[in-house]
Amino acid sequence: MSRSQNYGLFQLIFVVSLGAWLTGCATATVATADIGVLDPQLPIIPLATPFPIRTIETLDKKTNKRIETDVLAMKSSEIRKRLTTYESFTTIQKRDTSGGLTYIGNSAKIGKGTYIITFDYVNSTVQEISFNGRAKPALGQIGVGLRITAEVTTLTNDVEIGGLIPLGIAFNDRKVNGNLRFKAFGLSNDKVASLIPVDKQVLDISGIQKAFEAAATVRLLIGLDETTLEPHLIGVTGVSVSESQNALDAAKSKLSKSP
Image 1 (cartoon, rainbow, N blue to C red):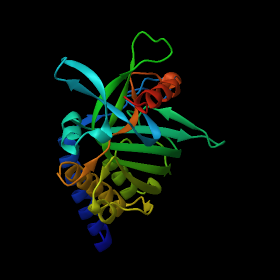
Image 2 (image 1 turned 30 degrees about the vertical axis):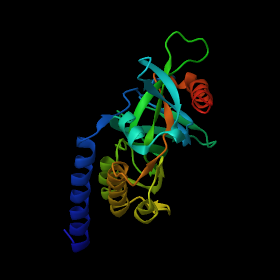
Image 3 (image 1 turned 180 degrees about the vertical axis):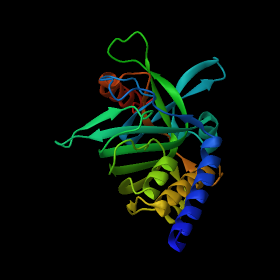
Image 4 (image 1 turned 45 degrees about the vertical axis):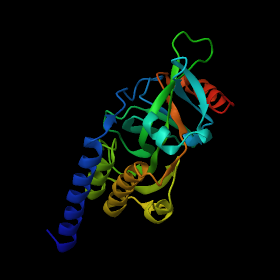
């Protein structure tokens, strides 16, 4: 093994260790739908860009009932107490020859092609979203955190891309290439700009390492008293892909109204 290969292997081991720390403390959520399913129900259908919300449900202690509260009227410490779950979501879309995107499950290895993979590392909660007279409401996933978007081209068949660690291994095996983009949302802290990459990163071991470091940084910043929090709508859960746009529209409408 050459010196450069040794260095790459060392970096990969570091990335795996950091990834294990992050996902070990998270509620890891992965899609289980088969690629062949035309209208799967995935763990989350994410918004293309997380959307700042105006209200969040809180408990009125006088009436002991849930009410909609303007997030700007809340202290960050109060918001932090509402975002009780640390979760990671992975969503994969395949780009077709016309440029369109189709959701696929990420439990199976995939073939040659171009894919958009969305990784959300978030502190979040959910609120019920009624739409289209549906008996069972969707759940709007709201919170703060980091979105990492990977645009990946697979160079061989039978490649696992359902996580940052598998992507790092696939790169090391020369099975993929691509790039990574980062977006911290729902938090304001002077350290964000200096610690989260603003430029597109090449998909390599160094880029994967930066991704995990960024996720760890955001997770720590969320817990600091000096960080201002403003929850965003991340996506919807509990709906099939065909219903998702109506659910997303309903969630945006409900959560952007004045209380």
